[in-house]
Image (cartoon, rainbow, N blue to C red; front, side, top):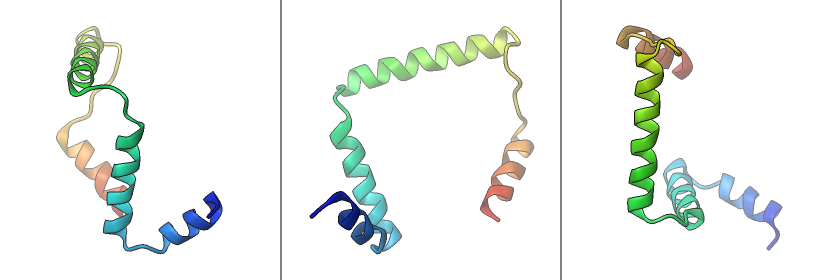
Length: 74
């Protein structure tokens, strides 16, 4: 089975099955252990907090985030 045929077959699966397959495929690409992943997310959180504290990025209120999410779901 070639990639195009496989993709076509997968796209006809129910969304829940596609989501589970996507999760499994992404996990198969992950070569880091959980500790490395946690460390990377911690470093990213510290970086983002520093950007916010330093005024380098704009933040959004909860209301703005909810309104943007609702607009995307329409």
